[in-house]
Length: 399
Length: 88
Image (cartoon, rainbow over all chains, first blue to last red):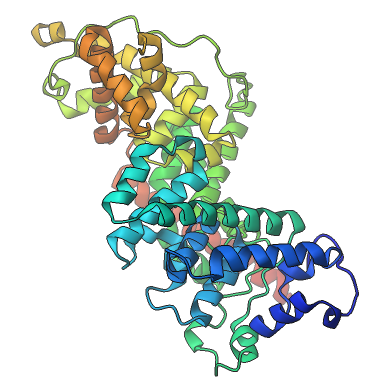
């Protein structure tokens, strides 16, 4: 299954395909999609053999972990699914491979392997930010030049594989019943059943603490939905306040958001966290209310301000401005200042700094890039600081 | 050498601890000598602390329970309505 049709040529004519079939018990979609050019499959198999399979300074386990961690960050469902199975197939000892894909930092692997994966992921995600300091960290963990070289090449191989899988639209096809039985290694461990072959449009790598409640709600459990409401109504309320600037209206909109989510739960595919999806509904509810009010200032502006915001009041603040006012006074002043920020800056600040959403999630719900979010966040934070400055300066202490 | 504009452009990422080591060092080297940037950094940091700890726009327990009950009642009513319709 892929975007392009492979050649119908008999696989027995291609020794590499035969070898792949012998290894996995079937021909994975990744290679099946490339059968128009068996010579390229040969070249890729050679690359995989030299970089991943052949013994080097890094162990196969370390190399597979690099592949898993980077594939997960690239959201390559195909490659993660395939290599989780390959790790199991090889009998590599250690935590569940899914754990490495989800978050290696909390897995039970040696600190040196964590450091290796940290640098590999940095190279994968921010290649231009990798510098000598990163390499030095690896050296302090005992890695030599050959280890480092192999790590770098492994990250490159991972990117290559992920991009080929994305570009060809290969659907995950590594199924324990195929792989394990194909190799005659015995029955499928039950704990791995149903874990693989996810629908092609889902991203099983997203960890969602609401998954169980969502699933129970889908089965008709109203108590489960009640728990989702109680768990998330604070976030939804603040999102609505951020957009409408009206706490009463936000309270009113709160019900609509949850009723809409309940009604449309069938449309939630799990491509994002449930809370992200719910927050998007809240943003639609809020912007709909702005339209009803015929307010022109919305979140929809896409142009960013070219002229940087310059702080004007640069008086040093009181060492502990919280001492100047009671908590309720301080909250009131802050709420007034937040409500006066332009919508474009207020919503990012409230989601990121008040609700403590990550930058990535905030950007996702606002449907803007992380770079655009950061630009708005900087300006919003500086504007908020400016609004509070007259009340927080050292002079204010004597008022 | 970083200018005040450069520091201001990186301030948010610096506060979020998202700068690379080399950028972070340049920001800090500038702030050692620039009182204005130090004041802006310190006051922005305190602003974020106030935002995070203020509990602004907190939904009261009363409202929270009322809204949750109302949602539950409306879903039940819808369900009953659907069952009536499908049964008739």
